[in-house]
Length: 139
Image (cartoon, rainbow, N blue to C red):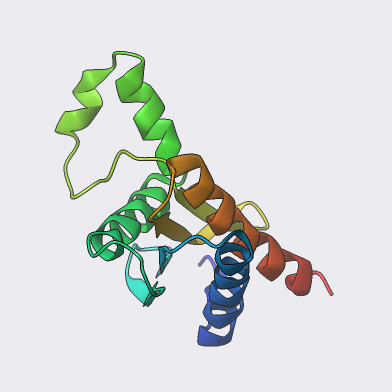
């Protein structure tokens, strides 16, 4: 039987705090979604001024990253490079940059999705939260 690591609420709060800190530091109004390894929502936060659609998009990016075990940008790149068959994949996947997997000891334990600014900036915010979590995990 395999034993797997999973995110706790304390982990998710730390990731969210790291994301929020980066977004506020940059003065970016975004939504932040964090899901577990099965794509189930554990955290959703929409900062003041974030677009109304950003909550749904951030959740979709996080879900896509968790289920695909890779960044949501990987799917965006596939479509952009002409592999449009990817669009027929089942599930409610979001093929936009800004979804980042949370990887611990080589295993995806969840993902962060951010939406509200440019896609590369969304990804930057997501990685900031994940990096804060990983730094604290190794202490």
